[in-house]
Amino acid sequence: MKEYIFTIDFIDPVEFFGVNNNKIRILQQAFPDTRILGRGEEIKIIGEGEDILKLQKLLQTLVTYAEKYDKLPEEVIQQAIKGKSPAEIETNGDHDVILFGTEGQPIKTRTPNQKKLVELTNENDIVFTTGPAGTGKTYVSVAIAVKALKHKQVKRIILTRPAVEAGENLGFLPGDMKEKIDPYLRPLYDALNEMIPVEKLAKFLENNTIEIAPLAFMRGRTLDNAFVILDEAQNCTRLQIKMFLTRMGPMAKFIINGDLTQIDLPSFQSSGLYNAIDILAGIDGIGLVEFSVEDVIRHKLVKKIVTAYSNESKEKQLSKE
Image 1 (cartoon, one colour):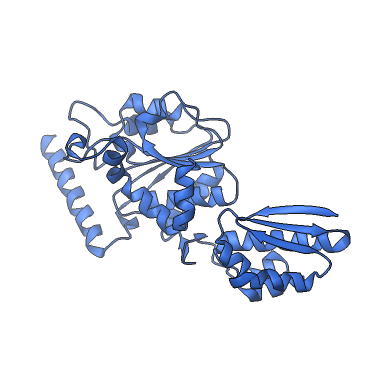
Image 2 (spheres, one colour; image 1 turned 180 degrees about the horizontal axis):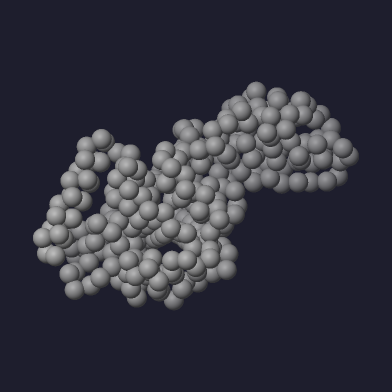
């Protein structure tokens, strides 16, 4: 007798096994000479001969489908049992979809530059993105990272940002360091909550499969086998950016996001993001996506607000000259 175990890390067991294991029974009826056991986040199959090999291949197809779409309808199981290939089962031909969220909603690229970010991340190990608020830099970056984790291309996701306040002071916030930092990392949590079920996300945060921490916590570490996102990078100094980039391990992917129009550093410090993009431009393996006001996807007024402030900055610069 042979035994195989499949894990369903990113799939709700009830969705995969069915209520009272009714989906497991569908499989069991199709393969009566094998045993199929669903417990926790594991599926164990026991058997021999051709049946166990067919069932192994079938379950891999179903696990892949469920990880991608966060659901497993009974009709998909029936199609797979009839020998349909993954390509024939997957009827969604929308190439802009990055992954499917916790409610089964498609999380997709919505502008050419968002699509470019996905493409450059596939082609490069480091990608810089710059552009105004509301262009989806953080959201799309987190979606790319979650997809990589789901597909087991990396073992961890690390999300970080410098602890620089926009007109406020961390010292006046209540609580320990984590409680002080969490409000500044809220956009990252919000994105994750749309992409990973609550219980699963809590588990990943607890066991550090997903780590969210201030940039200072990266010093001295090697970040390997991980997808790492540095957000609000415009508020990094030159030394901080250099420190962060040199943490990169051989099996890591980095995305560095920043808005060069919203620098909150003291006036005597220049943004390290400017410097990094300037000196690293043209290096093979490093990509750059420059978002613009045309990529803003929030309320229509946000685009007008960003444009107005940008025009004001240009006028002030011209008056100085």
